[in-house]
Image (cartoon, rainbow, N blue to C red; front, side, top):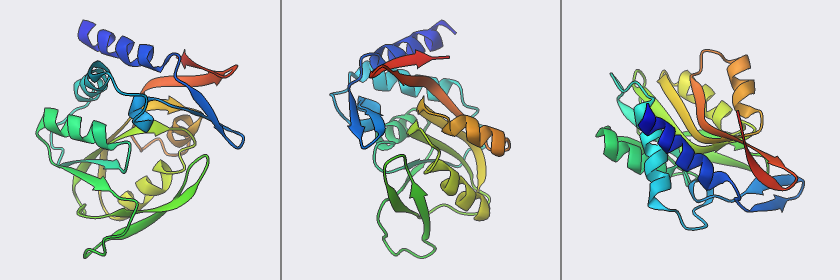
Amino acid sequence: MAAMNDALRILEDSLRGAPIIWKGDYPYFIHPISDGIPRMDPEVLKAATELIVGTTDWEGVDLIVSVEAMGLPLLASVGNATGIPTVVIRKRSYGMDGEVSVDVSTGYSNSTIFINDIFPGERIVIVDDVISTGGTLEPLLEKLEDMGVILHDVVIAIEKGEGRERLNRERPDWPVRSLARIEIVDGKVEISE
């Protein structure tokens, strides 16, 4: 338990003081886990990985999944730590047999993502960098569920906004959780409970 508390402290400390930029009316925090800049202290990635690995029941999990692009460092690190295969949901089509497209909407953009190499009956854990509105995660989880995939766990490193709470309220059967929750207050990142 002390190791988990230390890992959480490292992740939360790394979030404090993260720069904020505005995309229209949307306050966007910049952090190595969510943006790849500023440069990431390896201890931060290690801490996030330890929190994900240490709080997830891995029994029977077939695949770890993330969405391109900023979920990739977490996906690689967690896959390496668990020895479980990984797959990336991409932002471009490859035209592979069985490819499935999903329209998503973030707090500041709309796009399409593409699912490949995920099959009915597979038990998956999704790891990702940030949840804000839930506009990417919600249509993705709906599509995966429609495909017959078993959503074993969904772990988001950083939560900002009401997206996770809304999804948990509207779809309590989806196991969506986060490691650290932040708020933007007076132009600064603050940790919230």
